[in-house]
Image (cartoon, rainbow, N blue to C red; front, side):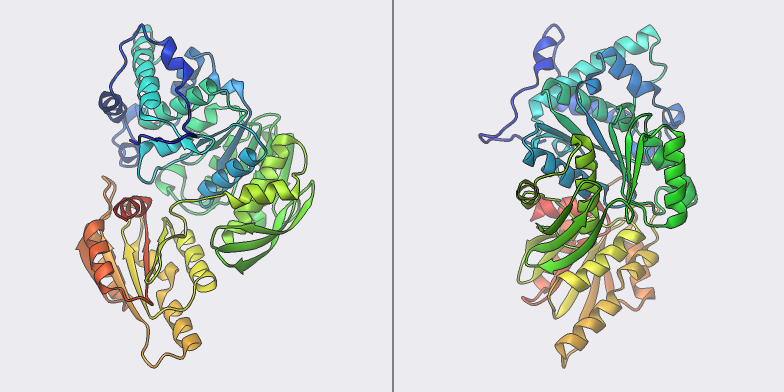
Length: 479
């Protein structure tokens, strides 16, 4: 956990001072309490028992007992297979640029659990998080003893409740809430979102959400509430129609569809990011600079701008919008950590994400001599398909042709095992790379992979760290 020490640090949450009649847990004890609850790893492996059954009853019981702190501010909720983290951060940056005190709830975290809950871009402090978890520990015991809870809440349900409580304590003007997984039964869906956002639909978490894109789409559109506005970014016309029909069946007051009601029409490469042309239902914006890499960030920005417009009910002044976008940061997504060699972090964790990453590498970054890819994956991923989506051979061929190199670009895949209970052993990535004709070895852990890459990488090489946010977060800490 972190200990912010700056003038913009968020003050202590008010609710903790109201709970002094209970003994407050220390930071360590609070985290131990949290970690004693069922997490995603247990749910994915079918070891969660009744806690793994889809329901909002537990999170609602907690929020009801706390007098529904989530009712005190408008919520903009974001789901989607890819891009939801970036869209969440961009939307929060815009709301802050409008002068609104903005709560942001994200998952997973890269380095510190505090990152998940922030107000005006300042992560919750150790003390505030520990105090809220202390209150939740007493509340959980009461709800279980009184029969209002049949089984304990999950790890993610407790963190989500903590976020809603903290935002209420801080009297935020608005909250941007990123769905953890799926939508319909995700704990974040206990909040009554005024604007619901879906970025896109790809195959991911099929063991929980369903085997087809249609199954996954129906889970994600489950975040739409009666009377809410649905901003829908999926381009597939069949899925788009299904999403629109289902949203109206669930009571949406309005559905905005990418390509019809809003879109990014141009996303040109610029120094340090992209220049965007975007139109929405309220306005059109030209030559907006977004300091993020990749054409896909233009799509995320279009969705975020549209969603914020719907939340505030009007267009955004272009100058204000540009200043807000200038502050947008998305750690771990095509993030540049160093140059000479160029060191890139990207948390692409599925095949669609890898394809997007491959496109961005080709368009946004300069020529290089050699490619070193540090890759670690979580269970459920197919290493061969992930590497095929990254298409390193094509990238090397482009590099050779453009640079007219007398010596061909060398590719090395450094496999590693992520620091997670859900990790896929690194040797499986190594074997998949070798099947594709890519030189590879298993370094063991992320630290060893980084150490090798630093020694082997030349000034004109590129070191790409990808495959799992656990790998990216670990590498970020080490750097």
